[in-house]
Length: 376
Image 1 (cartoon, rainbow, N blue to C red):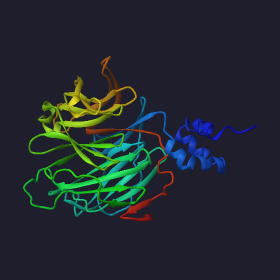
Image 2: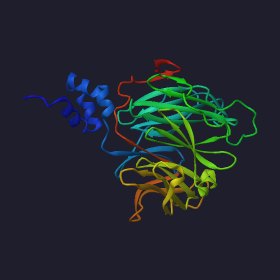
Image 3: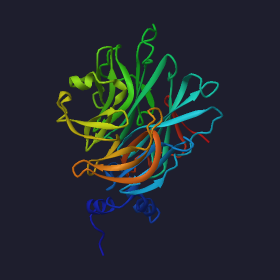
Image 4: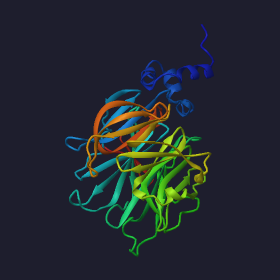
C-alpha cells in the first residue's frame, strides 16, 4: 500500500492535537523528521482556543493560574523558573501564536525595595511545556524608572520578538534623567539591538497595558494632554501614535484597558467594578472606535471563537480588592454562565492556541546578550 503524498500527509497530521504529535515523534524517524521540520512546525496551528486566567486567590491572595477550554477548568502550574536566592516576581505580559511571555525582576534587598539591573523574560509554550529564558539587561523598575515589554511572533518567519521600553516612571515627570531607551530582541538573532524604525516622542509614557494583533503591538499611552495608543509594526519596526475619540482620550487613564477580539483591537472603558463599556476599532482606523455594548460587570478578556466576554461578577463592595466569580457573558442573548472560579482582582485573561513553536529549543536554554547556555 502506497503512502499518501507528502502534502496530504501534512494536512492529515496537522489536524491532530499536540499531545498526539509528541507521541507520534517516537513512532519512527520519518515521523519525527516530519513533525520536527521547520515547514510543519511553522504551519501547525491547533483547532481549539485555550484561555489562561491569572488571578489572586480570594482567601490567601496567592497568585494562581487556570486553563479554560470550552467550559472545562484545569489548574495550571507555571514552568519551573531558574533557581535563585533572590526574590523573583513573574507576570504574564502577552500571548502570540500559542506562545506566552512572562516578565520577572530581581529585587535588590527586601521584597519591597526598588527593582533594578537584570531581569528575565520567559517565552513559554504551555502545549509542549517548553521554555526559553531571555536575559533582559538594564531593566529599570522602581521609584524613578520603569520598563515596559511588548511581545509578539512574526508570522512569516515564526520568530518571537520582545521589545523593551525603559523610561521615567509615570509619576516622576520632574526628573532630569536619561532619555527613553528602546531595544528589540528576536529569538533567531538571540541578542538585543536598537530598532530599525522611528522612535516615539520622549514626552510619551507607556502603560503596562498591551496587546498584539497580527504583527502589530499596541500599548495604552498618554502625555500631559490626552490618552492615546502607541503601535509598533514588527516588520518595519516603526512606532506610530493613534489618537482616540474625545471621550476615550480624556477618560481617566487607569480605567482604560485593551483586548484582542477576533483579531480586532478592543478598548475597555471600566466604570469601577460595576460596569464596562466595550469599544471596537473598525478597519484599523483609530478614530473609528464603536461602542459594542455595556455590561454590568468588569470585563477581563474574550473568547475569540464566539466573541463572548470573560467577566468578573463582584461579590463585595470593596474598591481596593474586589472579590468575585468569573463568568462567560454572551452579549447578544445577555446570557451569563458562571464558571465557578472565585477570585480577587486584578485578574487577567490570555488566549492561546496549540503550537509546536520552540520545539527545536533545548531544555533550560538561556539567551544572554548574544550568548547561549544551559542553566541547571
